[in-house]
Image (cartoon, rainbow over all chains, first blue to last red; front, side, top):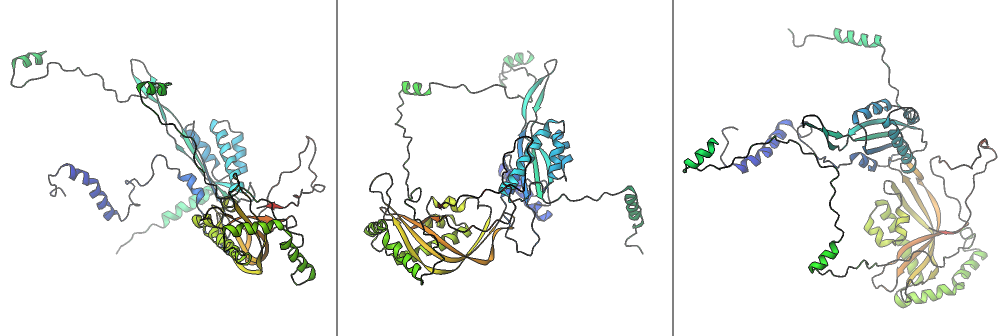
Length: 208
Length: 297
């Protein structure tokens, strides 16, 4: 490639990303495998809300009843995404009644907002998404994301300044109909047994 | 200062006389808090003073009304309509009474024939059934343009409310009785000559309806079990408009209509208001039933 450099200047430099991406596609076998290429999302994409619009084809009467999924989110909450994460991690896998009860008696600021979001989502589920029993829901996914920050000056001594970020976050929930899935709790003894088994399974491949 | 001396001496390579002293580079200039644009209050007055002439701004828009807002003089279907067959004496009497009695309908039909010369009650009744079937087929496929041409603007939101994320499967099995024109009226909207024709058609047929929600689960009805349906459809047309079409305007649900099948879901209804300390007695509480009133759908 070094020898193929011609002297056409700007036009050539503009073509470099195109050449690189085409090469990478040929090598990598598809853009999904490479994480260095940006696909689609801009700053204002509201994918989470769009997931509520997906329509599934009608089921035959013999199939297992598909559980209803409700996606809900709140944007630009005036709270830190790291502090919100602790609450989101606490809720994961709980049934909705339990989650609301825990958040009601939690002292953090984000807990009150999260509780409102969950109640909104529950109402939406019953009204719009044909969910029969409002307590038959559990939290399948819940996480927080960074919102758009405002920047301010924080004055230090000697004429130095720092950039202060006014922090905002988004919060996303996915409620699924049904009882919450039971996670199998592994005892220490089981884990130790597994470890020993892994050690015993070691062999030398392609040996003589 | 050294450079200035050089500059004055060496004329072959002139050097600028003044070099700016570098300041500390600001890597970040935060947006000034509280900076809002200056609100110009008198832009209009200033523009007029400058001599710019504005044309008069009209805040009106012409609206084209292609359908009426409701059903004028609704047809009141007699009780026991579907239970009596045409062959019995009472059935024949009812049939003869209905169409001859209403003089208003005769007048209206005459008016309609003025504007549309090919209007016949028999041909129109069959055409009405075709419109009905086509409209419902377009509803199952959510073909908006076709639906708008077959159904008036008043009926469209009633048909499609809440159906955007649902799948509807509808099938017209057969017609048990031939459709008949039972009622006609020609109301005029706003001005006197603006005629709209509303004709009520009665039809008795077998249909299957199944509604699936967003996740493909059956919400109401069943696909295999056909039901006998007695309906009173109101078809409307803007007579004065030469390009007007006969479109489905609404349905009349009589007060003696049987209750529909329940939805496959348990629904919470708000209970009675209790004073503090009072308990809810489930045994003595009766669910309030709605009144049996004729209403237009």
